[in-house]
Amino acid sequence: MEYHNPALLQESVDGLAMVADGRYVDVTFGGGGHSKEILKRLSLNGRLFAFDQDPDAEQNRLEDDRFSLINQNFSFLKNFLRMYNVIPVDGVLADLGVSFHQFDVPQRGFSFRFSGPLDMRMDQKRKITAAKVVNTYATEDLERIFKEYGELRVAKQVVQRIENARSEKKITTVEELKALLKNMVPEKVEHKFLAQVFQALRIEVNEELKVIQDLLEQAVEVLKEGGRMSVITYHSLEDRLVKNFFKTGNVEGKVEKDFYGNLIRPMEPVNRKPIVPSEEEVKRNNRSRSAKLRIAEKVNVG
Image (cartoon, rainbow, N blue to C red; front, side, top):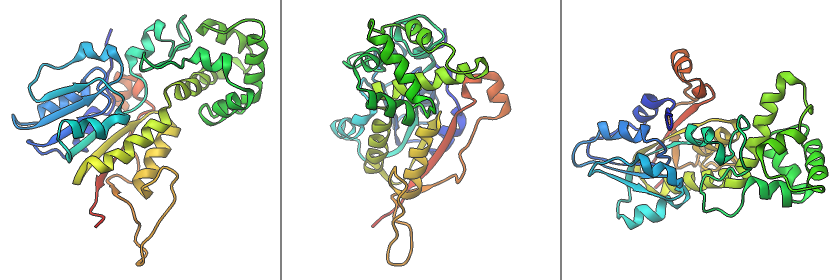
């Protein structure tokens, strides 16, 4: 089984505009696809630091003196780069979302295609699981999660079904959750509906939007002037955060201007529109179809 087939591989690494002896960070190591491509373009004096909180990623560690793997969430980016004394860096790459490996292992509970526990933790040391969310969260919190993170119009009805079911017994498996949601929507949109339900739970369990905001803010602090960031997203909530931050310097998209009417922002978008996979890439790798790449360069704000 392939651990992860990276989307927009060449485009995202090209976007870093690499220098051979530079310092780079791959904050989503996974199967090591992007890291391998970065190492190909580095001289013997270059360095690459990679982050991954999933212990399964350890099996893909690269044997290269220029490479260091840090088994932590990328929300600790600044702390660990400071520890290694490598700030500032020349580039940061992020391939957000769930690795294929995580989706394809039933025991992780990320996919509704398999039977398995309602887990969904990217970091197995986390205490909160999807089962804990559906069994213990208050009505208003569940409705907010499914509305905001799943973008579900039927959030209230989903929560009603969950509450009815959990009053009888705990909901602990993927199959149990799917069964209680059966026939909620027409069959032709059932796949999309379940994907939205599972996305909402996964984002809550892993605090995905918060850690993306942390990453963007810290990337600005660790990048040198002229350094670049490449970010690949897979759904609209992620993409909106990245788009807003690159455009305005904050995830809310609030525009701030100086006395002369110039935008105040630490990053300058390199591509106005996101780069998407070619038809050929989507044919080779269907899971890349929703990928979007945004690239930005740190500017001199002094």
